[in-house]
Image (cartoon, rainbow, N blue to C red; front, side, top):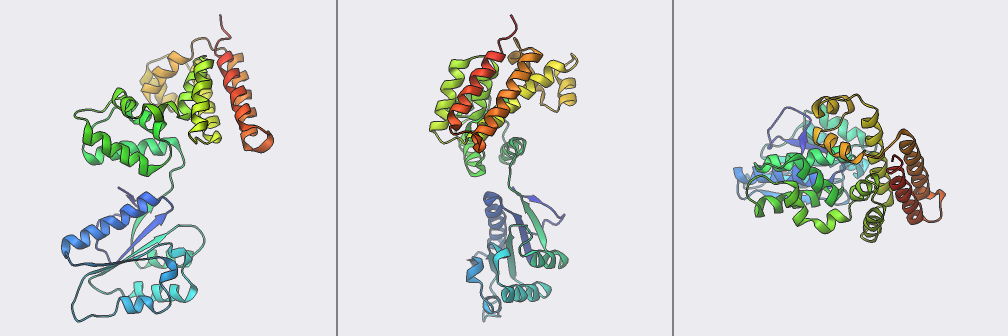
Length: 328
């Protein structure tokens, strides 16, 4: 469910403003309003319009009184792209909305069309935040919320494995959660996710990183080649390698203690502390420094300074795996 920025839960508020660029959340915001309207009136008329379809005068035509007092939902997508004259129409309407009509404005939230955004907020529109998820931690939170919304339990390891396997597409993550909860009874654990998404998990950037920091060069290279062949972006792999090496460095320099205490100190979940502890055997401070340089070189290589991103990644993986075995 999309996160609301305001306290109102009135899905049938005169105006709903869905702000952001995450398509899944924007679509959910629309579906929630439409479902509420049809629950109130099964014959609700829904009009879903793009910015170019809403021309000057169109809104007045769509909101004009009809012989039958039917409920309507008017959805305007990419509202930031509306023409100046149409924006004037929308601003006039939201200042005096019509009963039985719900207007849903989908806005990217950037500077373009900010006047409409400000006007809707000033008029007291119900607002739904639909931000693009760009960080792995945000996708992990999304998966946990999906399981919770369905009323099912999944272990932290299962949630992380699912994110590692599926990647950044929220639609695919939501679909995977739906499939798992439909097919599996009881708590969903890492083994269950692995059975369903083995092929995807093997292609994940984090699998490459895990094998590399464990010193398993051959397996890391195999996972790397499979990842690249299935379309995983090289920048995601360098990011995963960087996270893996930094976690080794942070934990190796931390004071000893319980996983829960270290988790608070280092900003990692307790289960990850246990995993990194197993991976850090064989690492030295010099090894961490060598691996971080290798990651930096690979990152530059995949972002344009090198002619062959694949070679840059292979070189980094081999160097990191070697660094993991510098002790002993």
